[in-house]
Structure formats: structure tokens, C-alpha cells
Amino acid sequence: MTDLVVIGAGASGLSIAREAVRRRRSVVVVERDDAVGGLARSLDVGGFRLDHVAHRWVPRTSFVQDVLRETLGDDLQRRVRTHVIQLDGRYFRHPFSLTEFIATHGPRRRWSIAGDVLAHRALRRFRGSPVTFADYVHSNFGSAAYRLYFGPHYEKTTGIRPDRLLASYAERFVGSDSRDVMRAALGRATAPARERAFLYPRLGSGQVWERMADFVREGGGQLLPETTACEVERRPGGCAVRAIDGEGRHLELRAGAVVSTIPLPDLVSMVRPAAPEALAAAGTSLRRLSLVCVYVLARRARVLPHDAIYYPDPGVDFYILEDFSYLSPDVSPPGCTAVCAAMVDWDRRYWNRSDEDLVATVRAQMANAGHAISDGELAGTHVARVADARPDPSTTGRDTVAALLDFTNRDGLVSVGRQGTLTPLMTMDAAVELGPRTLDALRL
Image (cartoon, rainbow, N blue to C red; front, side, top):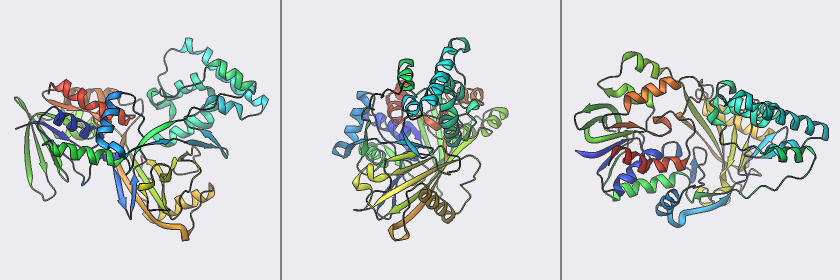
């Protein structure tokens, strides 16, 4: 009998397994894929290391900083972020700067936008706490910024109307104070943006989790790739996880505790004794977002003028373009780079299209945006489809999620992570911090 079984070798699962090994607990990690990292993994394609949208690190705590240094050592590189948003043919800083947005317009329009912002802010005291994304943005940024950027961009990236999107999606945004809004309306220069540094692994996002998996193995933990958990049975004093490995063999792993990072509805369906039928049905009704990434590999040192460009325009299929040349020279062959175009997909609109069709669409839209890659420069293409990339971020279903977690999180079983708690937004920092927090809760 092992101390702990972890279902899922993504960022959360491996962080928990790492902490278990550090505490000298026995641990087995079950992963249905043939590689670790989950959504944060890196793909090896023709000499390129490709991320499922790059995961940049900006550690907020000394604990996360220490874990990164211990895991990567000298392979942890400092980079400067130059993300921008393309609006009406112009580039704006990302995250969105309200004062920059105001200052780019003529005097009459500046005053109109500023007055709208200040009027919405004055009404906040009468409206109470915002419930939806639309409420939050209107009350902090006004209707013009909502209409031109926040509304179309976040409906595009989430597939949810902003008036049904959780307010937590906007709470990380920082609006300028009212004095800065007035200065921008007067045409006065805004303060230059601070340098936005981040950390990035030399061999791509997945290098963190590949190294962490090595740490788990070297510390005596087991990692079982291509092994699918099928059932979790609660027993006196622990749980049993039944799984099938890549060769079709049936396994039973007995443990004092089980931590799951797989989609919460999937976990509920495999717990024994079974969940009430109505609860299981409610879980399966929750929507899940898929991600489609189209990679264009170029025999060129750099394709984009910035490391990432966001496209709120509904007429452009991808919501972001990323140029890997800004991240690390070692993720591409010398003199080459990869560009990733990412599209979110609720209704299989992109998922069911052929790779050839998706690549042709992306290349044509890149050319229209001024970032063409000629046939002579083309080193290859790749399409990656990620099911269950993100839970439904809408305001509906929160009561269902709470009921599902109430069913799972007891008797030595706990569901954690982005998929495990159906939390739409979860940083890499939060995933790493789950290690000690989860084991403390389980008293391991």
C-alpha cells in the first residue's frame, strides 16, 4: 500500500508528487498520456520544441522561486515580455492600459471616453460588487473599452457572452486611477510602462515538468505513463485506484489517499460507491473548452514584431499569435522560429477541420495581418488539439461544481487543480503551491 496515488501528471499533479517525495512519502502518479506536463507540456516536432501556448513564469513567492531554481538551475532564463493587442491596426500594450487607450484618440474622443469611465466609476457605490465580467469591466474601464476590446476579446477566448462570464476573469486587471484618466483626457503623457520580465525554461514550458518527473522518480516515486485511471473505490483507511496500462493490463493501486487532477465530472463518474444519478448527470452537462494550436515553422530568425499579439477582431480565427524566438534560442533550430496560433473551441468548429485547412487559414490570416511566411521559408507545420483545456468559465453551473466537490473531497480523496476544481484561471505559481497545501490538508 502506497501513501499517495496522484491521478494526472500535469503541473498540479507533479507538484503534489514532488512535495510527497520531498516529505519521504511513497507516491504513484498515473498519467494517461505518454508524456508529462498536461497543458503545460512541450512537443518535439522536427527539431522544434512547441508549447501549447507558452507558459511564462513570474514567481510571486520565495517558495515557487526556490522550486524553479531547484528544478531548472541554469536553464531558467530571464526574458522581457512585449505582449501587445492589435486594435484597429494599432498595437496597444497587454495587459490593457486604459490611459494609453484614451491617449491615442483625438481631444473630443478622449474626453468622451474619460467621461464615460468616470461616470461608470461614480455609479459603483450604488451597484454593489460586480457579479459578471461585463459588470466588472464596465464599472472600472467604461463602455468604450468594453465594446472595443474586453467584450469581443473575452467572448472570443472563452466562447461565453461577457454578461455570463465570471467576474473573476477580470479581477486580475488593474485600471488606472481617476487622476491618470483625467491626465490622459488632457493629452498629457502617461508614465512609461515598467519592464515586464518573466522566467522561461531553456527548452520550453515542458522542461519544468520533465525535470520534476525525474525528481519524483529519483526520490523513489513511481510514474506510470499511458495508464488510464478507471475507478476509485473508497475503502476503510484509504482508497483503491483501478487503472489500465498501455498494454491493456489491469492494475489496482491501494493508497492511504488519492489526489485527482483530471476533469471533475470524469472523477465523479468513476468514484465507488457511485454518486447519486442526478449529481452524475449534472456533472456531465458542464461544458468544457478545447484548444486548437496551429504551428507554422519558419526558416527565419523572427516573424512577429512582438513575442505575442492578441487579436480581439472576431474576423480573425486565432485569439493570439506567439513567436517562440523571443522565448529561447534553443526551442528552434538555428536561424528558425515557430509561430503558434491558438484558437479556443466550444462547439468543435475548429476541432473537426482538417490540419491542411487549419494551416491554410492561419497562414492566410497571418499574411493579412502583415506576418506572411512564404513557401520558401516554410520549414513545416503542426496542429495540436487539446481536449478539456479549460473548464466552463460562465456564471452558470457554480452550484453544480460545489456539489460535485462536496461528493469527491472526503474519505481520503481530493480533487484539485484547474480541472479538478473547474477553476477557469490558474497560474503556474498556483499549481506549484498546491504541493504543500494539498499534503497538509491530507496530513501527509
